[in-house]
Image (tube, rainbow, N blue to C red; front, side):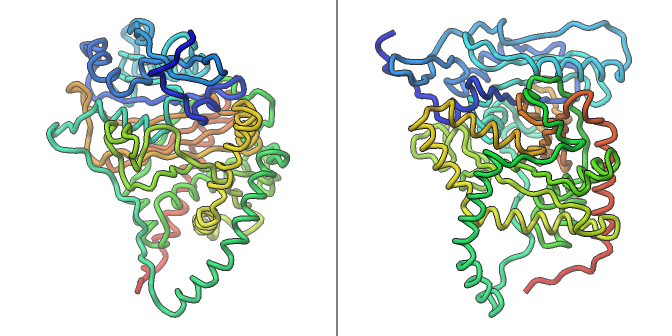
Amino acid sequence: MEFWEGFEPVSPTGQYFNSSVLSISVISVLESEVPINDMQTMSLVKDLFLPINPRFSSIMVTDTKGEKQWKRVEVKLEDHVNVPIFPSGLSPTSYDEYLDDYISRIAMDHFRQSKPLWEIHMFQYPTSNAAGNIIFKLHHALGDGYSLMGALLSCLQRADNPSLPLKFTSHQRSAPESHNIRSICGTVTRISSLIYNKISDFGWSILKSSFVEDDQTPIRSADEAVEFRPITISTMRFSLDHIKSIKAKLGVTINDVITGMIFLGARLYMQEMSYNSSKADSTGIVLMNTRMVGGYKSVKEMLKPDSDAPWGNRFGLLHLSIPKFTDFDSSSNPLEFVWKTHKLMKKKRNSLAVLFTSSLLNIMQKLRGPEAAAGYIYKAISNSSMAISNIRGPVEQMALANHPIKGLYFMSVGIPQSLNITVMTYMGNVRVSLGSEKDFIDPKKFKLCMENAFEMILKAAHELPTREYC
C-alpha cells in the first residue's frame, strides 16, 4: 500500500509494548453477581465496545517508511469472543480451578497481528466469588490502565441508578502542608536537594535498567524468558476503610500504605522460604500515571487533541528498593515499611527521574529505533524483582447490561518477572492480585504472608496516638 492518509500513527510506547522484545497485555476480570448465560454478548460488543475507540477495530501495520500505523479493518466478532465449555454440574470450588487454569492459559497466548488486539471470554460457570466471569484481554499497545479502565467504564453504569455518574475515591493526602518556619526551611532544603536527586536517581535508574540486577531470591528466579512461563493469578481483599485509618494515623497516602504492605509481605515470604533472602537486594518497580488529572475523563474527552488526559500509554516507572529486615525488626515496628516507602516515593516523585527516563527513551527511539527502546524497558523490568500497578475503581456498584458487577481485578501479563502485583479499589474494598511464576512462587503462602503483613501494620497503626496537623 503506497498511501497512508487517514491512518493513525502508533505511539512510541505502543510500539515498545508490541515488539519482538516485549508483548504485554492486560487481563481484566469482571465478576458478575448473576449468571451471564443470557447476556447478548455479540450485540454488546458491537454496539458498546467497538465504538469506544478506532483502535479496537484496527491492526498494527508498517508503512513504506518503516513506521507503525493503526489500520482500520473489518472486525469478525466470532474471532474475538470466546465461550469456553467445561463439564456441567460441578461445585464452585471445582470451577475455581477451571477458571484459574483458563486465565493462566489465555495469559500465555499471543495475539495474532492480523486481527485487532483484544479478546473477550465469557466464563459461564459459578465460582466461589461470582455467578459468572467476563474476561477482557487487551494488548497494552492499545493504551495503559487509565485508558483501558476509561474504556471499560464507558460500557458500565451505576447499578442503583444508571442516570447518575460513577464516583471514585479521593487520592488526596490526609495531612495538609503547614506554612510555618520549619516548612519554609524545608522548602529551601528541598530546592537544594532537588538537583542532586535528579542526577542520582536518574543515574541509578540507568544502572538498574542496564547493568545492575536484583539478587536471585524466592520472588525472583532470574531465569531467562520468564515471561513465557505459566503464571498463577490469585487475589485477596482488604478493607479500604482500614487502609484509610492507617493513612490518617501515619500522615501518608493510600498508595504508601498499600505499597508498604506489599513490600513487608514480600519480605515475610522471602524470609520464610529462605532466611538469608531477608538481606537480599530487591527492587520493586511502581507504575505511575503521569497525567496531571485527579479523576477519569470520558473516552470522548481523552481522544481530543488538546486533552489534559489523553488516551494512550502515559506512565512512568519508579524504582524503589524494598526495605530489608536487617534495617530494623519487622515484628516490633512493621510501620517502618510504610514510612520508608513513603519517603522513597516522595523522593522519586520530586527527582523528576521519570521525565528524564522518558526523554532518554525518545532519544533512543529516534537514534536506534523502537526495538532498542523496548529492549531498555525489558531490562529495566527484568532486572528488578516485582512490578506494582494500581487503578482506582468506582465507589458504587456497577452493572453491565443489567448484570451487577460483584468484583473486578486486573493483571498485566507478558511481564519478564516472576512476580507482578496489581491493585484495584472498588466498592470499599482493595483487591490485590498476584501474578506469580507457576511452580516457583507458592501463591497460597505468599497470600498468607501478605495478609499477615496487613494485620501487623493495622495493629501497629491503631496503637499509635492520633497525630494532630496544624
